[in-house]
Length: 315
Image 1: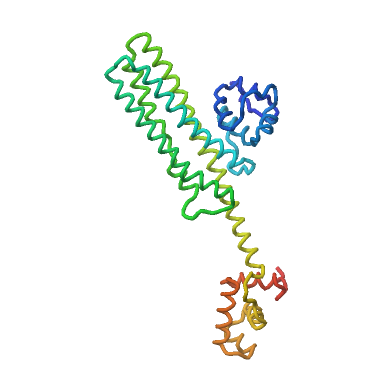
Image 2: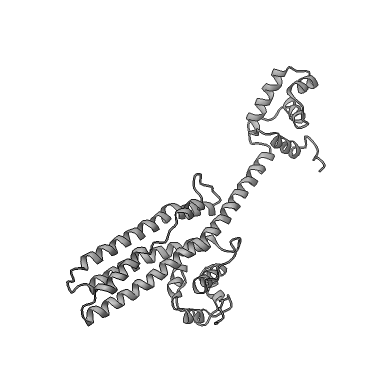
């Protein structure tokens, strides 16, 4: 059994490409240009502004099916996003139109099935456009917002993953019809064979593209969502424990009431302690909530500790 070759950052880029010509299109999606001489993968990535770790992960996944742990935090979501977006552009703007043009040329002999074949191809291309445009309109902006530290309500990567599907079905139907029914003569056969080769290659590319999204991109987004959520919680706590930027400061009486509340006293007990009415206590509590925007006892406790109203409790 042949041992799986895992590529590393110190391998030469030319060796990687020579052994795996299918990665040529991947280079373009990463924004890596040819003409890199005998430099290593790491040197090429560094010079051309590509995250080397993520590049190697994608290479080993596409070539060997090697997938990292879903908790791998070193994978760059920004790099994956750029790779997927560039892949969309390549496929929609170049590959799909090129295949259609070659298919049209192959069917130029006037075969009665030609219009149906082209219609089937156009239906397939339309489905691919819808699939990729949805990602560009919905998923990619969502990820960009996460990278900025923003959270978008009512959407997450699980919604995308749940509806993410393989779109190569019509390709299979198209290939079968061409193979079974179309070739008439040597020229048509050669042309259709070449077009079929392109279709097979692009079907494989599209499957790989979908797998990169599902196996690498989706887990990386999950980790990013968790980080943004944690950062948001941290920011809320930080904001909560700091003195609020308000034109209304906490009065001495309100400070006394906060201390009493943190000590677990009821409204009646606070009123008795401070020689005020229960209604006055309630009014002060409302003012405290309005000024601090803190609604929980835990929040008031943190605020009191942070502002030296009480000592840190012993655990």
